[in-house]
Amino acid sequence: MKNIIYVLGLFCIISCNETKEDTIVENKDKPSMSIVRKYATAKKISPIYQEETKDWAELKAVDEFLGRFQNVSAKEILSNSIELEGLVASLKKESKPEMFNIPSFKARLNILHNETLRLVDMRDIPAITANEVDVQTKKIINSFSAVNDKINTILSKKRFEDAIDIDVKYIGLDSTKIDSVSKKSINENLQRKLEEKTKNQ
Image (cartoon, rainbow, N blue to C red):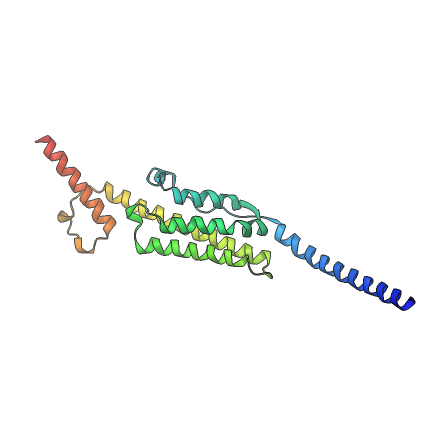
């Protein structure tokens, strides 16, 4: 009888120690994933181009969602990763203003989408660390900044071209080498001038 009591007592002590060890490991992992970190905001679209992008719902949705990542923990980032990936997938897939249907802009959207997919994958890695989530979050913010940067560049180019009043045939441009955005702007300017001339006659 005494032997049975000793065995049961020994078993209880061993199982208590294992539970304590598990708790210690859990508690060591939890704090780092729950620490709130501060992130820089992604580059914004220039205020002078807000009018051109005001109806672009998918772009706004991604911008607003990433705004939540300014003060956030790794745990919160991972729990929001699927929703973020869905928003970026919509931005990539849904129709966008025609001037942005160019390979260089699509490439930036692809990079952004790939980075969000990587973040989603991190949810299923048990050994993932807060630092790895931190690095990935910064990559996503930088990728979205690159998207907005490209939007600013395209709209700046369009605005510059719209301001040019000289017909290309008078300045010796090879119209076969002008990209689609430039051609469209030049044609619109010429059409507008033609309409004005017709009205004045």
